[in-house]
Length: 427
Image (cartoon, rainbow, N blue to C red):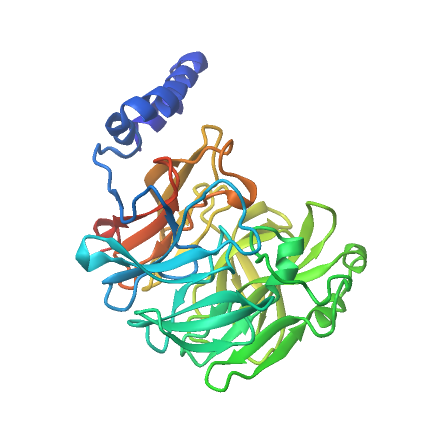
């Protein structure tokens, strides 16, 4: 156990002394003696988190469910932008580029786009059919959001009439949703610059989850909002506006998961987590307890998700869609919501937290079988400057070989990307 925890949790020392020591450590010590701060928390003074981008411009990757590294690990995808203090407006462009890992982390700009947000960027991701030299992103053209495929030199290889959210592991298909509707009902995840055709329709028949054939370019609706709204409707569902979000394909490509969300107020909503076959068939509701947050697939039938358990409250739950079960994961060590993702070998869970009372986010690893937690870093993220749509979640994501992690962070004053070697823990 870290020295700071030993002192703060000691039943022998008076509360006043323990509280004063914690406040000193998390404020004055953190800012003026960072090496001592790390030693108090982690038993080491060295900073294992290394920057791979630098200011004055701001850089970030995006969400936690995609890896920024290409197949060889020589390049990382990144966004670059001049401002960091407001949501993007229609027409605001972001530069898309490559961090040259094998060339002292130099940033090479290759394209721009005006379809982006701070949480998920432009859905920048490597194409599974060519994860070494081809990437995918979204753009806004003629008032519509579209998907784009590019080569490393920025050449446009293909475009699609629908924006891309998630690509299937075989690279043959992708899933799309209505980013204009997200911009209205879930600011921070949608894109400015286009209008939702069904803005006044609470649950349109023509909107929902679309699948796009990446070879032919043909897309079709596989799950509609109207159909979701008709499944065991509650009173709040009948009154709310519906949308879908957070689409993720299972590791083997056999199932796809997504959120069905409906607004219950100006700033409140309820969520159901669904899974389905790639064509929208065999639709199953995995979690229907009102509150569902971040998740990741363990395999083609099990999902780890932060959600409300009817008897245990909000917890990380391991849900098995075959057994229709949900089991609490990380009892006692994982006590708050975070962006969870499995290592490539599925032996570890990478996770983070939101800012605590000292505006600190904690980065951690959890051994899956033992459910033992190892804290890796604590990073300052002042909510007074970065919160709401412009917050900078760590969104930790894995390298393809499972030996490194990457986060976005503002702890040094600008939004940048950082990498940590975790091979000492995972091997």
